[in-house]
Image 1: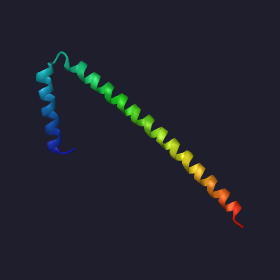
Image 2 (image 1 turned 90 degrees about the horizontal axis):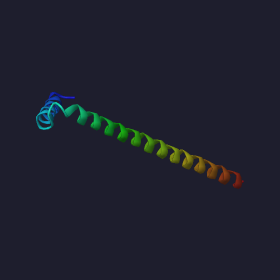
Image 3 (image 1 turned 45 degrees about the vertical axis):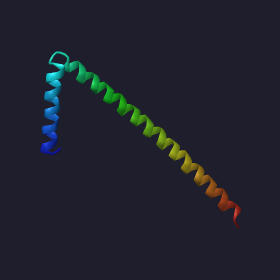
Image 4 (image 1 turned 180 degrees about the vertical axis):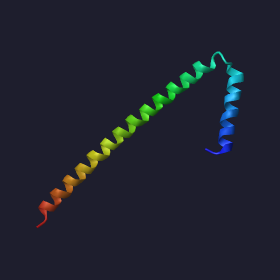
Length: 73
């Protein structure tokens, strides 16, 4: 991450600290972390299902190709 990226993150953290306050900031950050974890888990499950569907499609295509090869002399 570039220096500008770190500066932006620091600026956002400072603004959040001022607006939310030091008392509630850990609770908010914890909630954001849990939300990010849920999104990551959903993404992982989606990709797992997508790969499974893709794998089934490859198997069906291979079976179709084998059947066509058996029919041709």
